[in-house]
Length: 346
Image (cartoon, rainbow, N blue to C red; front, side):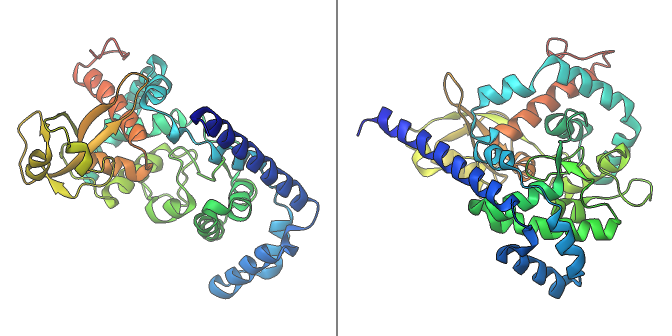
């Protein structure tokens, strides 16, 4: 079979799969969700393990509206795009200008957080810029709807989303929140930093001791929570992030798996055929970062902190967008510019 026909077959299978899932969702909405065996099993588990009230959960799930668009969106994630797509989407003058204003507005808090957590303001601001355009786009899906849909109508990741749904139920109980009022992304990510419920529960912190922690509107809490997330996931104060690299051996790419957490030292990578530009401790661990573009592949050496950014979203393109945006903002800040654009940072 030709490569073209194989591609057509793949596209057709995706379309048919989504259509089947959509029909399944519509069929499920015609009956009470609480009566579904899989959902009833989940409810009983939450009752047994977390002391939830069964009547309350049955009533809650019967108010859920399944979302076929959540399935469609997660089946075609932006992470599958190349770096060219990411760069054009996230590295724009408006995102840069708004990010610089956001930094100026919160510079005192950001400075305090850098002292406490070791995470640069430019990284925190850039995360929020990439995630929600500094809070402007936090999502229009009811979190309960999105999580339930993916937990019970999307088999490829149902285990993950059932855990997140359980965490969400614990979260709304701990914070005394209305379960159907909270809105987020198609995947159930919440607030300006787009924390999944588990991250909300384990990484969200208050900046000034206010409770409950509000990741939708309290910008000080939001900034502190992102800083805490990075510190807890291995960010190293003043550590390097990314460096240009050249390939010195033809078979280097045959022996190195790119875009995964560093396990080899710079010396070992050099012996394998990677030469990093700059003066770095040869015992420092790093790994190859490979970015595909519409033109040619780009190669870098990623250190621990680059891969910590990838803990936020497991995509080298995503981490590169955050890193690139942060570099532009950092240069404008160092220049004490009144405003910031891509050109002004050069």
